[in-house]
Structure formats: C-alpha cells, structure tokens
Length: 68
Image (cartoon, rainbow, N blue to C red; front, side, top):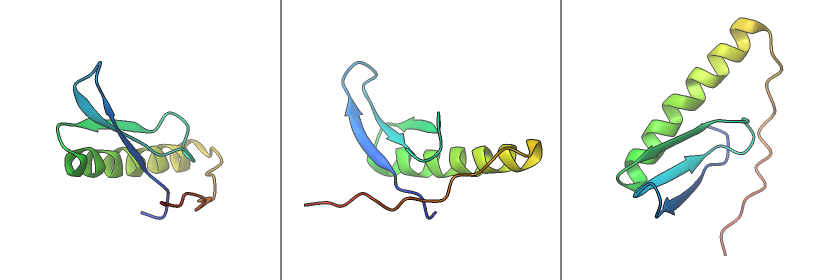
C-alpha cells in the first residue's frame, strides 16, 4: 500500500487504531499493531474499490510522514 498509515493505541477501545489520513474515514482496529495494519489494508482496498465504483476522486498518496 502506498498510503501512510498511523497506528496508535486507544485506551478507550482497548485496541490499536490504524488510520489512513489520505483516505477520509479509512480506519481499522486490532488487538495488535500487526492486526490493525492488516485490517486497515483491507479497509483501504475497499475504500479505493468503492471510490472507483462510484467515480469518486481518489487522493494521491502524500507520503509526508517521517519517524524520528
């Protein structure tokens, strides 16, 4: 997947939350970071498929995140 993914722990949900900032509303969760990443990759695939199906614009990956 070419899109940035942000994974963080949610104390309220007791799960890791994975977010694809370039795809509005594209989120997934899982009990581990790895599971959240797998789940958000599936969510992003579905997001892109649905956007294509309805002719909605698909944002280009920004690639703006960096780890320090």
